[in-house]
Image (cartoon, rainbow, N blue to C red; front, side, top):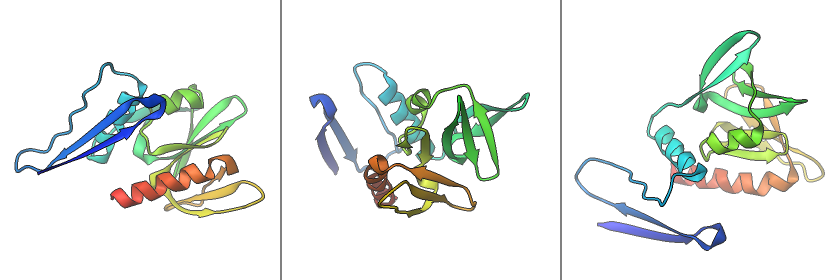
Length: 165
């Protein structure tokens, strides 16, 4: 038994997704003309969803830390520095937010010019019609601010993710 889903991606490209139900070993196969940033993000997302781990390096003072991507709550810019927030700390990277977006899995979502959040870690959103809304994270008091321009996209992604679990 199998299911097919065909969607049109931005730019008119066609994306085919085929799910086959079989008694054999589970596998996910990605067929593509070339490996680009989208394919790498898809590969990283699937790997993390199936229990894999991916780590990025960050600094705190002179010490370099290797932190699992799934442990990061959000990234934000502070002046010229980009910080990565976990539930128990804050670390720094030399990468820009746009560079991080090319390597992070799809559950990391841009929510303002200066912030990217891990949508899986959000437990609540305080909506503010006149200004920035606030995202709250599981197990810690940290918050991230969501621009009105990005609010709807974040809500849609969270709904899709919750539906797929």
